Every structure is written in C-alpha cells, then in structure tokens.
Length: 151
Image 1 (cartoon, rainbow, N blue to C red):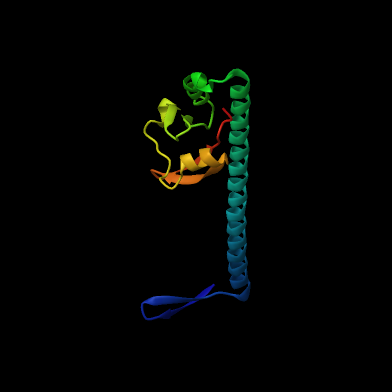
Image 2: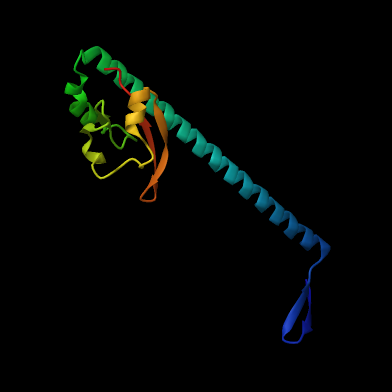
C-alpha cells in the first residue's frame, strides 16, 4: 500500500488484488451469516415440532390412562396426575378443567401463570377439538396444548 498526504490525512491507495480480497471476504461473511441465520431457523422449527409431538404424545397417553383407570370418575386422579406430570422435563405444568371450563386441578408450578384471554377453554371442551399454540409471557415463549378428555 502506498499513501499520499492530503491535509492532515493520509490517503491510502490499495492495489486491485487487495480490493478484490476485501470484497471476497465481505461476500463470504455475508453468505456465512445468512446460512447461519437459516440454520438457526431450521433448528428452531425442528425443536418446536419435536416439542409439539412430545406434548401430543403425553396428552394422548394421559387420555388412555384416564380412559382405562378412570372408570366413570376420572377427576379422582387429576390432582396426582397434575403433580406427577409437572415434574417431566420441558413440562411447566398441567391443568384439568371441569365440564364448565373451571379449573378442577392444577400443578403448583402453574399457579402464577395464565393462558392468554383469547383462549376459550369452554369452547374447546364444547367442541371437543384440541387446541395448541404459542404465546409470550413475561418475555418467554410458552407452548400450550388443550385437549378434552373423554369422560
């Protein structure tokens, strides 16, 4: 590199090879950054998909358990199940609702957490259609699944 004094500044002249090297380096950095961003998005989507499948499997297992052991009064097991399942990895807690959509049993870990107001548990129970989704709570993303049980 050579320089030329202009006022109080040194003006630098770069050869074509140096300019080409810097432009190639910049291009590689941009492409690598974009690839990293896409990779993180794919990983996030994959983790969320795995979480949804895991929670659905727990929900279905719980449904079968209550069908087999619950006889005509599955609510007898709600409190024990809520406590036990809350200790599973990645499970914040479990809530059972009665037929009117009121809380019948709740994990202690969920006492300070609420579903967003737009989620209508009574409608889910009435239509017997499971619902799941994501919401933000205190800066953290939470995944929820609500599924009616048969009894």
